[in-house]
Amino acid sequence: MNGPAPTDDLCSRGAVDLADAVRRGSVTAEAAVAASLSRIEAVDDALKAFITVAAEQALASARAADEQRAQGRVLGPLHGVPVAIKDLTATAGIRTTFGAVRHRDHVPIESEVCVERLVKAGAIVLGKTNTPEFGFGAVCTNAMQGPTANPWNLALTSGGSSGGAAVAVTTGMVPLAHGTDFGGSVRTPASFCGCVGLRPTPGLIPDPSRKLAWNTLATHGILARSVEDAALMLAVMAGAHPKDPTSHAARGWKMPRPDRLGSRDPRSFRIASSPTLGDAFRIDPEVRAAFEAADGVTARHFETARRAHPDCREAVQAFKTLRAAHSWAGFRELLAVGEDDLGPSFVWNVKEGRSITAQDHLEAETARSRVYRVFADFFADHDILMLPAASVLPFPNAQGEVTSIDGVECETIIDYLAPTFIISLVGYPALSLPALWTDDGRPFGVQLVGRPYEEDALLGAARHLQEVAGFRHRWPERSG
Image (cartoon, rainbow, N blue to C red; front, side, top):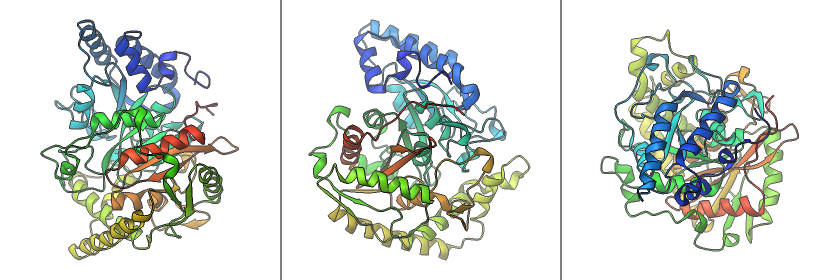
């Protein structure tokens, strides 16, 4: 990398600032896009954040945006702002591979709705960020690209599966990146790389192309360098869609301006914290130490802060069963064609669901219902729950899967995601916020959880910590 921060001022600007500069005319969309493309060219050979860079299309779109502004037309709140889209999500005219060799030449003719909304708001899509095959894997790698390197140490992982998006944002290639999150695929890379990662309430960002329309385990998400930038991107993508039944509750939902987050004094939020949700999962000692340090800082900035947690004893097995069932339902046809060109992590994840019965599935849904109601009771007395955003710190790419935590062998290769997938199970919005860096330079993020559809309060609490506690993005100081 070329030093700790981008040398081009445009690459170091956040989305809110850059959008305002384009709107005022002090910066052109073409200049913003050209700066991002130059940054990608300068640093991405080592980092491998992108699978596809659509430079010509992006520059053409930027010039068109500048022409429209010259005619007095501003497309929307992201007019001229470069963004990146995770390569699991369809983009019209831009190659979308899903991280799979089978789809290396796939170019969709239509974009998914969340991408359409970004473009309608004036965002310029620069390309597609790296992901493990079909989004399954602890390391962000596939047969075509990767592994995506952690910008704080190139030997370490960026996390999966939105690792490319997290790295692109953290290093200034783009101010905003789209991600997806099933069990933690936005929040884990955000923690590993040191940026903001937001998984909103399922349905808030609609997904009308989803095979299982009522599925709320997975959702689109956001990676940014600041809470305000994440709020701006969410405001653009959120809203109901007639073909997504989980989005109907978002009808009429409106995100306030990024500079007006939170409808009350954030110090008055009742904060609960727990390192393991009552031993629902294991964490490495380094994570525990980092969390304790972050918790100590956090407690000083809220009037009510205490150790408390909802009962999550049933959550882990319920999620594992449902994830396996959904993976088998969604991807078993790919295995039927053959496994020779498919990675072992993807194959394992899909095959985990082949023996699950209808009774298994219904029992898991019943347990999920109980845990959800426990969370509802808990959040009647608390506004924000804080826990680690990951059970481990960034580990070597060469390691592959996480097979043990604190010296204890894991039952499965997804056990390390328990801090995030428990929250996915109940469908509460969550945000990973960079809290501190270890002595050897590895980032650690705390996960803040709020009530469904109360992203305003969640983002307000996160911004408070960003401003008063210094829980914020930093430019990587080294690359290996």
